[in-house]
Image 1 (tube, helix red, strand yellow):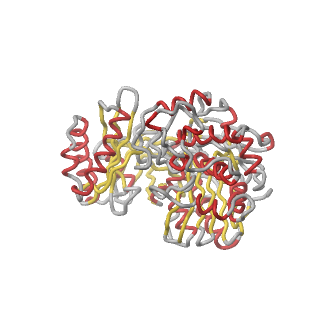
Image 2 (cartoon, one colour; image 1 turned 90 degrees about the horizontal axis):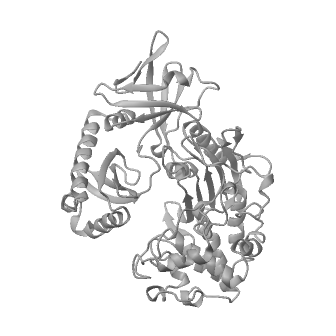
Image 3 (cartoon, helix red, strand yellow; image 1 turned 90 degrees about the vertical axis):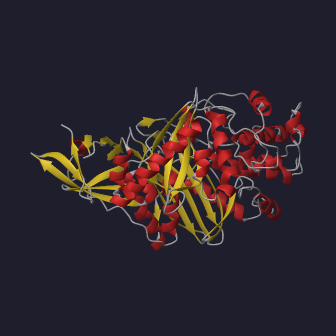
Length: 550
């Protein structure tokens, strides 16, 4: 394909959404197919900001952890060839496997139920295969194999090493010969495709340009097999089409590949029931700014491929838009940002600086990537950007105080205040304690800061507090979800910034500034007040003015 595709009502609907949100923080490419026909394949934003190279339908992106399905597929191919079986234990492939890992099977590695550590090292640090395997096998198990689920990138690195041993050729060569070439994937791999003819998207975390994976050391066995394979939207659709037939995999092999174990995880796929039927999916992301999503709604015959090459306010961009995209695809109404004029009605640089709220809270405004970024430095600023009512503001401020109390106690080893705040304490205590102990084990925290309260990304009609715990060498972020003064959920997350809620804004007229938060599909409008041609105030819909410092 040489041109973008936007076809039919469905394709135009998704294109309008992605086009509208691009000035508010989206960059990447998307492919959408319905009933076997591609209705959208198009790029948005920039692949290279320095050279102003746009993302297109042909831009090459990182698939992230979607790579795991290629590793799982390679294991299944070897099983079809009679060269291994998913019930095989590790000692069949590695000498001197420690006793606690001697019964781990390939099935458990494939389904993240082996108890293997998550990471063996940094993605782009050169790592030898043999040393990496030894490091993974020497590390303590997280649980007895087969008894629980814990996502493990390192487990898929072991699988890649096994593929090389059994196939007697390099991992990527086996993928190319047995899977990718037969499926018609010409632009998928680590190094074998001819990337010189392609635009490979740079990764952006805020203003930082992390370049492309082709500029990084290779091969790194911290990444090989578990992430980092490059591809295009069209190639991923070809992979979907190949998986529909039986030329590469038998029906029995595919049924096995798509049968979930713990946590809906099968062999490189999550298999979930949605409002639109069964969905086979996987995502991927890195702290460098890249992220990817591959969803196959098999009952609805809808396929979505989404690649992103920048972060969103310090968080993973696909996480911010995936639910909204699903809503748009299946004709649900969501608020959109306004269409912008062809040229900014006033120079963005006029806004740069600090705006002070009546209670002293500060909003820092900067110009980045042809947009305004409004970053609050306190909970008061978050409340102002959210446009909270007085009652909602009281709830958020109370939740902040409550979180500070229970998290400060937990830092000292006293988890009783946290447990007392739980809704359904008796049922939820084991899970909450397990989550807390996981953070303590990883971080060994000595300090804590409640970064703020924001609307929950996980539960409706709830808000969530993000607390940062800092230890001697590591940091961890503990999310506690609150509703009606009770804790209704906890989880751990990874952030690339301590900024938990900021807004990207664009002026729509000389007197109006609009913010739009992708995660919540949340538009807010602010009046621009001038004094002697200089911007003096930004006034919210609640008539609260933030005054610009001179």
